[in-house]
Length: 293
Length: 44
Image 1 (cartoon, chains in turn red, cyan):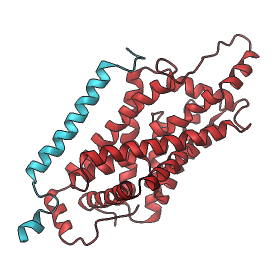
Image 2: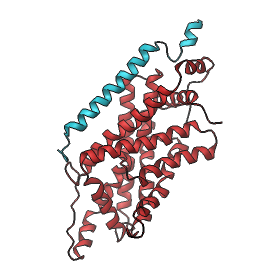
Image 3: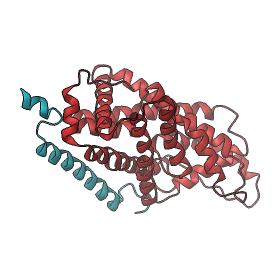
């Protein structure tokens, strides 16, 4: 039987203790776990690009999104099963830890910053590696990577922000249900649902976008050379900064939206739905306050 | 405003979200001062 919601918040608090114990005692290990988690997210992004390039839109408008979601969905499975760090998951875990007095606000903020830095380095490094290969520097992958970049970075601040909220609402719902599930199959199914939903749903995830949107920037020279040969095409120039078609523009509003989706609509909701007296009773019989993912 | 890093509406919403989150935890801890070890402490 999967855990009930009272047992669930206690399990999440135990995971919080495990993770923040690592942050306190072995910050470098946590940073490495964030690096690996960030890379694992863009394993999925790379696969999504590989399968969705060249899919004609007139065949079925959502087909490319579905294919992307289907290959992306194992990213969260491998992160959760391996116990690596994904900062958007640690946001809701840390908040439940604050409710359970496992950590204070200062440690919560420090953990999120450290997790983000690790994820950033992993996501960026993996996509830089991919950009050094020849595999994605040709049509139709070159065009597809650029089209995804232009579509995501071309949105307004509000559009990105809203899809950032939706993304972590769906993704962290899946992540918390992974903790709730008991059997391996149920855990895999729950973890797979998150990325499938957020990718097929065309939402914005900060760690996925770090690498996903960096790839067309790393390959922009190849892209410009390739489109120069296509008549009547005016290329969209992507850039690293703020403003339309900017990497930082997308990243800023995605991070803000991701915070709200995971904390407000998952962490706070599950904590407030749990029964405080029943949770307290569960603590009476507890001997171990640490749970490794 | 649509492409500025200082979109006032979004930043206001975000600051409001931080305030709501902080106050929710604060009120919860005020209502349950010994949470989550309430029963254990009562028994002592």
